[in-house]
Image 1 (spheres, rainbow, N blue to C red):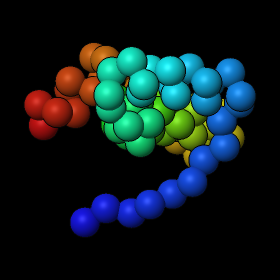
Image 2: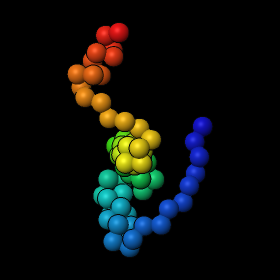
Image 3: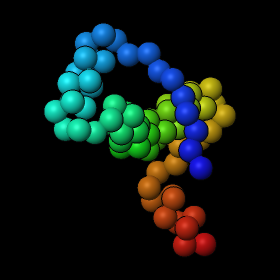
Amino acid sequence: MSKQTAIRLPDETFERLKALSERTGRTSAYYIREAIEKHIDDMEDLYLAEEATRRIQRGESKVISAEEMWRELDN
């Protein structure tokens, strides 16, 4: 099952997407979907890392060394 959404693009980006679609015979939706699917993992990782950093800065999480991590895994 798939869902539909709408986005606003800057004029220049829209024109580039339109030209690409016309040159290749693929739809704009195809390229938008491809871009999202290609980059969503990286975006999720970035935002999770930023949230982890904020928790550390607020003292809600602690940082341990690699040696300590391996010791805890061995136990």
